[in-house]
Length: 319
Image (cartoon, rainbow, N blue to C red):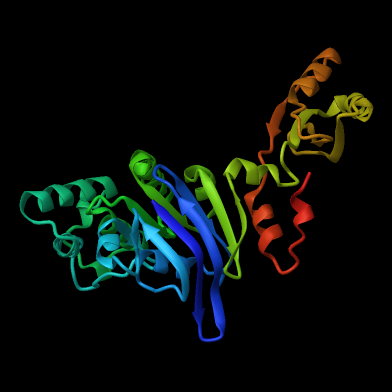
């Protein structure tokens, strides 16, 4: 649904997006990540037709953004950074205006308004001036205007910024409900949103793609991936320490008592294979009680840092 081919955007001598190529098919939720100034917002503005590429080609639902800008805009819902709106309008008045600008009228407009007001839970603030709304509700109004015409492509810049945990949950549920019929691009610095929502992640830095994979694959790059944390009774720590020293498939990377009368171990597998079953069986044979056990999936922030920091020591994220 979205395709970028060798897209570059320059601002004078500065290159914001540098020969970027990627595609987003129907049914995919793409997490579009990068540090501040990496080119994320510029890329999304070019996809939406707000900016023109200096070179390269962008198509949305088969239409070229330069040759058929109106057709492209019909098919895109875009919530830009900050969710700009008209501060003196009410949410209802603003959404009514957006619906008419999108070509909706009569019963079609009423159905669209009812749908997004219900989906985004805006009924309690419909008649307040937007300027008086909390940051979270302003974001929700911005999301509602992006969805009002039921677009094929949805581009969301920080969609849950300013929302409380319950509101975030509602927006995540909404995105999960609609994702099969749309191509969705989400730019966010909240990495938990990537794990919760996205089926693919693209990280860019200085206008170039530095990583393109699934969230699961990115987590596997973290040095913490598959680390096992196990707590045992403090009085059994000597027996357990000796046992772990004999196990060739793990290395003890952390070992200390905690405040619960237990001893906590962090164990790093020597390979990418899970060692949980072997650990549990070995402790059972030694009659050691397992007080707690947790397996680390990995840490996206570590991978993000490895690929985008000034040091860019990618080896930190490798097994």
